[in-house]
Each structure stands twice: as structure tokens, then as C-alpha cells.
Length: 380
Ligand SMILES: CC(C)(COP(=O)(O)OP(=O)(O)OC[C@H]1O[C@@H](n2cnc3c(N)ncnc32)[C@H](O)[C@@H]1OP(=O)(O)O)[C@@H](O)C(=O)NCCC(=O)NCCS
Image (tube, rainbow, N blue to C red):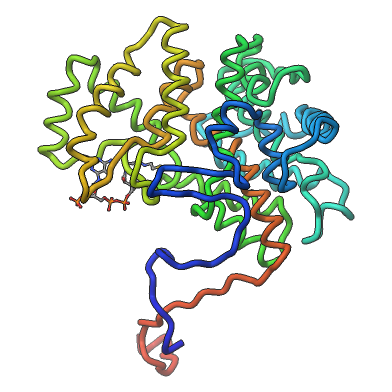
């Protein structure tokens, strides 16, 4: 242990070799299994991207048809799961519900197959598909509405909007929702993905690994900046107020939500994609308030925060909250939506961890008391 290097938060420590995702923070590029995120966002679907992440290659037509059918068969929620959601306290957090539902779901799959460390979570695709149905149903029950049976014809994202609203989304809405899941599906070794790999490394099941990953994502340092961006937009009010708001924020050294990233020192490639979708939706709704505020803020901040020593540019959260808002999704579902997408990446990492496993066991530096004798109660 003498030579061990201390790195708080494992900063800069390499703990795995991976073939799943490459983040090029300097050039603002993101690749899933070598494919640029821009291509996947333009041409793929969440179902196809999930296939790619889990199976290491893009599917043939037949492979995709079979996989898509398997994913869609898992959409419907068992009555027990529905009653679990219904009985969840109304002010309980959706992320906590999700964590419990994933563990609970493991009881509904054949024991021999799925309750071992070698269980192949690609068979039922339960965790991936049902998370989406659970999030939609959680919100409906919260609003005192009925459960909506899934629509097997719609894309994964389109069906989420359908199960949430009870009416079919417009094709452009379904496409934008599905794309949001594609771009959230994977992002290398962030805290929740690392958590999934740590739990998988003990040879625990994919259900407990995913449940733990959801727990990690529910912390405010991981998900949630898109909600803060919406609060900031409301505080600013309109595009005319951006100059004054920005000058004040800089003078007070405030952090601008949705800006900056630990890895990207350029604009997050996913932010460009979300920005385009926000523009499209704003046009369809004839409501450019959020878009105009964000674009003006981005333009003002580039010469100030983007300068050499800072490298602060928009991240995916800068635009995503406004996209979800225009899709009629309440802010409390933003982090659960992140989980709905990222679950594909978590599963890919769990499978990869198992292929060349070693249990994670880092070390700590002991700074507690020196060894001492047990003190009897009457002497304390
Ligand atoms: C994402 C984030 C945590 C990255 O943090 P980081 O890499 O550790 O960077 P730091 O927090 O150390 O910031 C480095 C410098 O940039 C500044 N900075 C970072 N993000 C900033 C922001 N969003 N607005 C204004 N200034 C910012 C810091 O104040 C600091 O300035 P200083 O060197 O003069 O003190 C940080 O940029 C942030 O808090 N962003 C806002 C929240 C957000 O959008 N989170 C979602 C990320 S996907």
C-alpha cells in the first residue's frame, strides 16, 4: 500500500478497458462502438442503438425485427407492478420507485435463468423496457389517471409519450423523444455506470446492478441540471433580460446551469442535437421563448466562459429540459428519462465487466485512531 497513489473521487484513475463508448472531450465528439453520436441521432432508433450497445454491432434487418419485437413484448406492466406503483406514496420520488421496481421485477422472471451472475439480461430486456412504462405510469397515477396499455406500433420513445399522455404523439414528437433516449444511452465511466460495474464485479445479478446504478444517478451531482436550466429561464423571463442577468451572474461568480463539463472542453455534441430538436419543437409550437433565451445566453457566455482557462460551453442539459418541457413532460421526470436511456449503457457495461471480471477493491488511507484498548462502559 506504501506506493499507492491517492486520487480523490478516482479522478484520472483508469479502472477498466472498454469497447463500448469513446468520449473525445477535446474535440467534442462522442462515439458508441465507433459510431458518431450525430449519425446515430440522425439515422438510428433507441431500439437499434440498444442492440448495438448490447451486441457490439449494428443489427441486420432480421436481427432488428426480432430484437424490436422482443423489446416491445416487454412493454406491458404486470398488475403487481402497477399496484406497486399505485401504492407508492404520492410525494415519493420516481427514481426511488424505479430502483425498487427493478429489484421487484427480478421476482417475475424465471429463477434459474435470471438469478445467477451469468444471467443474460439480453433475454427479457425487462429492465430496459419496463423502466419506460413505469415512469409513464408513475406520472399518470400521480395525476389520478388510469394506466395506459402500450402501443406496439410506436417507437420506444413514441410509446413512452403515448403511455404518459394517453393519446398518440405526433410523428415528430415521437422521433424527438426517441432521439433523446439515443443520446442519453451511454457515456463511458460516469458515476452510475461505474456503480453498475462495481456491483456486477461481485457477480451479483443485472437487476441488482441496475438498481444500484439508478441509485447513483438519483443524486443531485449526477442528474438534474436540466431542471435548474428551466428555473434559470423562468428567472430570466425573456430574451431582452439576458444581458442584465448574465452580467449579474458573472459579477456574482454564479455557475450557469447546463454549462461546463468535466470531460468536454468544447460544446457537448449532444447539446447540438438537442438544440436542433428544441428549434423544431419551438417552431411547431410557435413558442421560441426558451430557445431565444438559451441562444442569447450561449452567445454571451462563449467569449467570457469559453476562453482558454475555462473552456465552459453548453452541455446536453442546457437544451434538453426545454425539449422535454415542450413535449409536455414535467420536470420531476427528467432524471427518470435519463435513466430510461442510460439503462442500455449500464447493461452493456455489466456484460462487458463479466467478460473479464475482477472484483473492484480499491484502498483507503487510514487516518483514524492508533490501536487502543477497549474501554469499559463505566470508564467512558
Ligand atoms: C459540470 C461541472 C460540475 C464541471 O465541473 P469541473 O470540471 O469540476 O469545473 P469546475 O467546477 O472546477 O470549474 C472550473 C472553472 O470554471 C467555472 N465554471 C464551471 N462551470 C461553470 C458554469 N456552468 N458557469 C460559470 N462558470 C463555470 C468555475 O467557476 C471555475 O472557475 P474558477 O477556475 O475561476 O474558479 C461544472 O461545469 C458545473 O457545475 N456546471 C453547471 C452544472 C451542470 O450543467 N451540470 C451538468 C453537467 S453534464
